[in-house]
Length: 56
Ligand SMILES: [Zn+2]
Image (cartoon, rainbow, N blue to C red; front, side, top):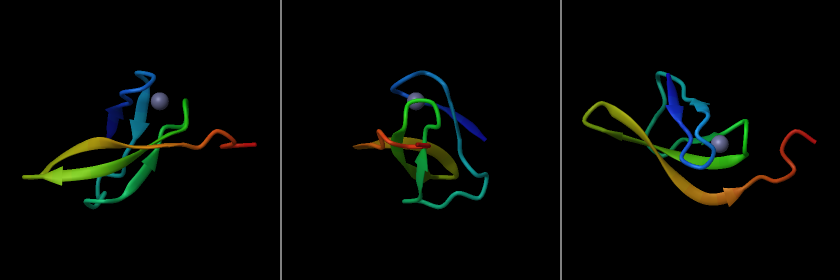
């Protein structure tokens, strides 16, 4: 599924079988999120770490 990045507003790809606590990265701005699964609903919480050299 695609969830919205709270930093840049772009879509963040999250695996449909993502587990609670899994880390995903916004490919656009490099913000890292932790997957939260509650009652079968998936949301993202920001970890505060920015991977500035991602893709270099
Ligand atoms: Zn982003």
